[in-house]
Amino acid sequence: MKELFAVFGNPVYHSKSPLMHNLAFRTLKYDGCYTRWLLVEGEKLRETFFDLGFKGVNITVPHKEWAFKAADVVEDFAAEVRAVNTLVLKEGKLHGYNTDAPGFYRALTRLGEVKTALIMGAGGTARALSLFLRSKGVEIEVVNRSAGRLEWFEKEGFVCHTWEEFEVKGHDAIINTTSAGLTDDALPMPEELLDRALKEARYAVDVIYGKETPFLKEAKKLGLPHFDGSEMLLQQGIIAFDHFTDHRYTLEEIEKAMRPFLELGT
Picture 1 (spheres, one colour):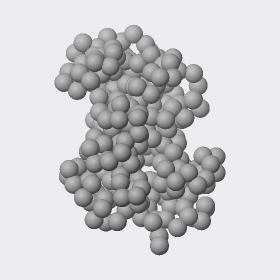
Picture 2 (tube, one colour):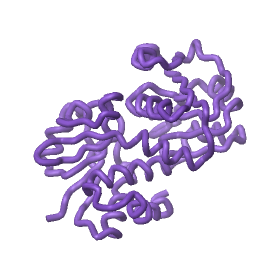
Picture 3 (cartoon, helix red, strand yellow):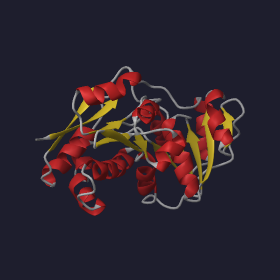
């Protein structure tokens, strides 16, 4: 019987995960099918998973914290950041993983050495990236509109700023983890402040993929090398696919089967 997989999110119409995973299923001759599912209420994530008979799902904004709560078993790193983006059904239990951070790091290492990074946003993706990058020796600072969501980062020992108190000092990479620009023309920080930060950076990275966001347009306007989230999407997808298929293939085999999606889907 064909195994069913999906990406849960709101919005989710833009997701290219189905193209990426279905291409790998066909190439590797795995009997699976992957689709999108608009999940409006995060508290219904677990119920929806079981009602629709999925074997595994990826979770995108804004439901990664709900996915953490829905899991029966959570890997150590996902438990640390309290954010899950991959759920897999094993022996009746939902196993939760976070493939965002290791996928992002796999992508980042292909761009060059990064010693310092400024992360914009304070949600689940920001928590995952900040901890994982710090574990790899990257000095992290976090900036967010409001102070409330920065409390977790402060407790973890990160240097944190609100927009009002942020002073630009220069970072190798500026990383947008907010949803600003996904469906609108918003910037992740006020334009003047963002431009000052970009002028002192080596390059910019947006975890949003498949479009040139206002953030990346600002980077382009300033002549700064910039990248969207396509490579991160690919790399985290490779790791998620590995969990979906119970480690049947090597990461190299999965990447070879999945990488052509970048040309097809972007």
